[in-house]
Length: 307
Image 1 (cartoon, rainbow, N blue to C red):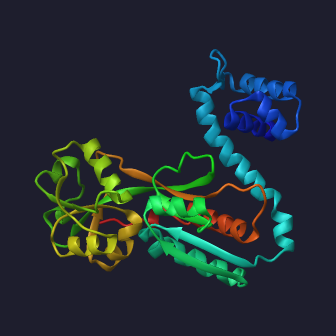
Image 2 (cartoon, rainbow, N blue to C red):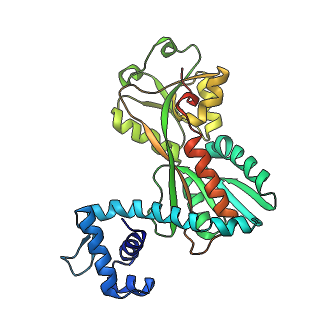
Image 3 (cartoon, rainbow, N blue to C red):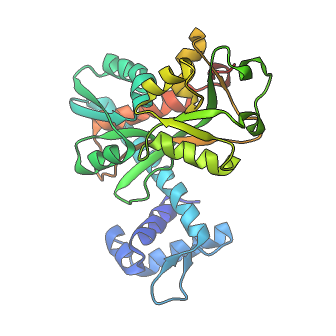
C-alpha cells in the first residue's frame, strides 16, 4: 500500500470528487482514478459507490478513511523530524482537557516537555468536551484531551491514545469490598452517583446503563465534577462508574476500592485532538509526539488500579 495512494484516497474522500481531488493534488484526473483503482484491487473491495449521481464512500471506504487519516498524520509528523531538530520550538502552546486528564495525565507530560523545550510558554485549561472542541476550532487551544470517539468534523485531526476501562468505584468497607469479583447482577439495589447531563462522564454512565440494563444502575444523585463525585463515594453516598485514571491515586492510598465488571466490557477511548494544518508547528508537533509516546506506552497493565 503506497502513501501516495492513501493521499489520493483521502483527497477524494474529503471532496467526494475525482476532479477536485486531482486539482488539489496537482495530478491528472486519470492518475487519481488509477490510484484509487489500484488501492481497491489491493484491498479487494470497493471504496466508493459510483452508482449514484453523487460519489459516496462505501462501508469499507469509511473504515479506511479513519486509518488513512492516522497513517498520513504520522507520515507528515515524520517528515518534519529534520526541521524540528534544527529549530528549537518557541512561542505559545495552549493545551486543554477534561478535569481527569488535566489532573492525572497531562502534568507529567508537561514537566518533560518544559524540561526539553523551555522557550515555549504553556497554558492549560479545563473544560467539557464541547467547550474543548470549540476552543480548538477557534484556535484558542492547540490541542485537547478527551474521552470518547474523536470528532468526525474534517477540520480536526485526532489520535486515539488508549482505551480506558470504567470501574465500579465503592467506599472502603462496602459489602462489595469482600468479593473476589463483581458482576452486573451484584449491583442490583445499589445507589449510583453520576455527573450532570451534558458531561462526558454522564454519557459514559448512560451507555453503561444501556449495556447492563435499566434496572442495574439506579441513579441516586447528580454531582458536579469528578473530585466531588469521588468524595461523595468515599463518604458512602453511593457508588460510581469512573475511568481508571480518575481513581488511581485514591485506590493506591486505600481511600476507595475499584473493580472492573466481569460480565461487561465498559471501555472508552482516550483521544487527543487538534486542528488539521498544512504546515508544521514545531511547538505543537513536538508536544503531540511526546504525548503520544507517553500515553500509548506508559499505560501498563501492572499500573492499573484494582481492588
